[in-house]
Image (tube, rainbow, N blue to C red):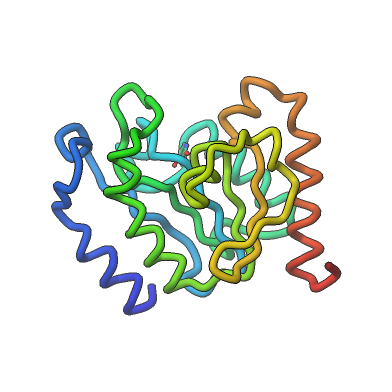
Length: 185
Ligand code: URA
């Protein structure tokens, strides 16, 4: 891990900036290549992630891993993290207070990794990064820019597990990301 990422992670140890610290087993910082060209941002750790201390290791994570492989990449090639680093009870959506307390960590992670492309997974990730209320169905598949970095908003793998017919849109979006990383667009 880069020194800057390590420092961000170290500074987070014992964090009590929001109520979620009372319920967590682990702080799920994120993992992957500290120099990744591609970064995936999800919502928040779930039960499995809280137990393992790693992002996207449950059923949604298995699907995300398949999505990454379908792009001819490995998990180790990319960087995977979430908007917030601690599990909300019963996997409820993070509150605005929790997001505002935690998002500075994500901003530092982005600053350290400097990916070429970010894929936001689901409404919470997109809306939190852009401080927006646009629905994910409106923005999925449309390039956005965050601090000079191209961002592709798409659907969350948990949603795809419930509504597999949306997988074709995610594949469409991931193909755009592959083209961008190859320099085709
Ligand atoms: N869902 C997320 O948004 N993040 C995880 O790490 C796991 C499930």
